[in-house]
Each structure stands twice: as C-alpha cells, then as structure tokens.
Length: 333
Image (cartoon, rainbow, N blue to C red; front, side):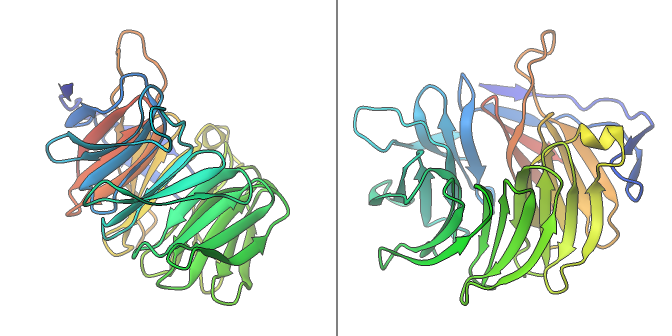
C-alpha cells in the first residue's frame, strides 16, 4: 500500500529540545509518501546508508529485504526453514553487499546480490544490538553478558571482547576509523579503539541508552538515552559539542531518540524519536533545520509509532522506517 500525504500548512511554533537549540519556523512536515512493508508492524529494521534498500524484521512474516525505489520485496530471510524468525537486530554494510540479521542467540550473514545465507553462528550471549562494517568483514555485537564483542566473519572468530559494567544495549562500528561506540545499562556511552581494545572516552547519559552512532569520518559521535540526555560529542577530545536534549526540561525528558545517522559528510544529523518525529540538525551550528511526523495507520485513531531507522539520499530525500511497518519518504532541506 502506498499513501500519498499532503504537507500541512506552516504555522509558527517553538520546539524546546535544549536551552541551546530552538526551532522557530514551520510545524512538523508530513511524509511525501509512505510505503507499507509490514501489516502488523516491526520488531526491528534498518534502511541502508544510501537508502537503496530496507531490511525489516516483521511481527508476522519474519525478515525480508526490500528495494526502496519500487517498493519491491527481494528476499524473505529467516533463520530456520519453515519458520518466521523474531529478529531483534539487523544491519546492512555501507557497500550494499552484505547484511546481518540476529535473533536472540544467533545471527546470519546474507549475500544481498543472491539472497543466500553465507554464515550462521551462535552468539556468546543474548544479542541486544549489532553493527556491520562497511566491507562486511567485522561484526560488533552488544550482549547481555556485559560485553561487546568484535567478530571477524571471514576468520570465523571473535577478535576483541570489550568488558562493560552492565548489559550492552547499543553498538555502532566504524571499522575504517578503528572505533566502536557502545551504550550499556550502567547509563554510559563508551568509545573504544577496536585495534587495541582500549577505552578512549566515557560519558554518562543518565539513563539506559536508546541510540548511538558515529559519523563516517569518525570525528563526531551521537549518544542518547531513554527520556534523558542526547548529545553530539567530539571523539578526539570526548567533549560535548551540542546537547539536543537534557534532563533539565520537562519537555526534553519526553523525547527519546530511537534512531540517528550522520549525513552529508557529517555536516548534518538525521534523528528519530519514540513519538514518530524525525529531526534534521545542522552540525555546523547545532540548529534544528526541519521536523517531520511519521505516517500513522489511522489518523482518527492515532496509534503510536516509533522511528526505527533513518537514512538520506542526495541530501534532499530522507527516509524513515516506522515501527508500524511503513517506510516514510520525507522531502526537505
């Protein structure tokens, strides 16, 4: 199903997400288009970095890979024949050659050209999150046993085990720059050197982490916690550059960031929240440039929708995958 959505009229509004960042402009825009990928919603999902593909773990039919431009389902991906897997995490490498899907205790590496499974492995502990390197060789897993592990998929073995003080809820890997960013249930976000296993920086978020991500050049990190702090910070110094939400405001505490991606060579940040709001930030100034509200199945009986993944194409067309099973196409600056 394809839903065409007309943009709302512009009305002046102030959105307070921090004392530093104020938007005085148009209200939330609506999606230009919303394509249905799953009838009953998603357990997990990701849009590829170039927005060519979306990979979902649906409530009813397990995993599937979709081509974004024509909304075509390419492959059905489940971990066992004849079963629909409950997929808790997934990722697509930046070159669109490989994808990984994870159930609670196992993961599968897929060939995106053929749709064939290349490898199936058990994880050392229950999987909470994962991140795949650009060439598909390295896989980072966030686990409930208070570790993040770096798995060499070609060698078939774990090459780093990074100890934390609690369950590792979120991970983001930038293998090219040698970084792994994690968030664990002791409320901290940590930057690691994956070659040495050394902890580089650690910041307290004040609550359980909800999303972490690194810029492609490795210079910036974004870390956010549930109903709490959301920060952009410098990976070289560990210093906070912008605060997108804090614990100081009642309004801010209602905003939980659930998805994020640096775009335009790190000059902008695209984020999504648990309330279905997508926000575009300028990383040169810290200003909020635009906001959108995701499509809902029934406007007369609104059902909450969370942003699962975001991506951008050409700096103008943005994409946001909603937990209700719709891929939203967002037109904007």
